[in-house]
Length: 467
Image 1 (tube, helix red, strand yellow):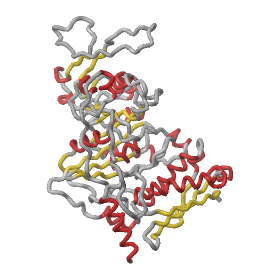
Image 2 (cartoon, helix red, strand yellow):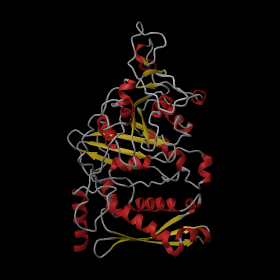
Image 3 (tube, rainbow, N blue to C red):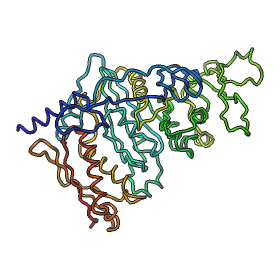
Image 4 (cartoon, rainbow, N blue to C red):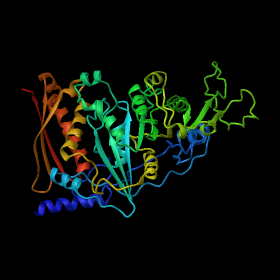
């Protein structure tokens, strides 16, 4: 009895000391160093982009990308949120008890359900983990790492944010090709039905897809036009030519942000003989009566000036024929730019989400971090590593079978899992020369599991060919 009590006390100590999601876990003693968040250039709508587009201001990032590009003075970032996330329960029984426990409602509770949608590999799970402050969703460079919907819970003071992490929007052909669950076709749609707000994530580092939303995303948004939507441009740190963000924003919003029509005209004529980048000249739109013909500027027309407003008509319904000619979505309320993997400007987005919460009862106890079972968290993290280390389509054929899950004498978590592969050649790839590959997978997955459960984890993996 003493060992489990000691283990629980250590978990509570580490939680109270603010263990970081990405910091190395120290074995059974002390607190984890470092703060969870850092931000040093990306921006929310309230920074440079907000000033350019005349969108209601929110917060600005420190040394924002567009702000630096346009010569706009930087402002201080928002203060980091002080609460630290709880650990994931280590047993099914404990997690079940937490999920069934009546939420510890504050006096004036507020809640917001957030669906995060986007193309596969846009960074949805990475953003979810950063918002939660602890890694509970699998992250990989390969597509379709997230195989089913799961909920993450952020509890801050009197507000609860419920993140509906979903698989990337895909089609039946890709589901069959990657041997995926059929639920991947329906889960994103189901999440939208329960959402109060939707984040549309776009990878701006992918020059093939960054200037247009996928047809699956557009179709999903068009089915739920009444749900407020926010555009989140991810991986901005990888984009070398930051001035391209202006074109990307224009394309992805159809030139409309928060109900205001935008017209972009070139502020300069580029000289093809010069290799130097010409300066961007952004000026305020002049009143219609005083504006000189052809003057270079961002021009806006307020939607409220139209004789028939959207409020009178209700949300516009988009037909399939309309979506064919659309590259973006004209109903985004806000735009954020961030680097989810590095945690830059994630806190800015989190502050915004907390402010969007509406009065309503909490769905979960404040000690709940995710709706997933401990075994699901474990399976996802191990699968993430398998995806990283195996080439091409090979990892999608791996089946995971948990053989042991129990608490050791000193309170550590003992896990043994079999990885079943269809061919011997796959088994050799997964084991690696001298067992190096499977050892790396076990080591890295074990470290992530320790950070999720905030206790010592001993993970053993065995590879077999399916019978």
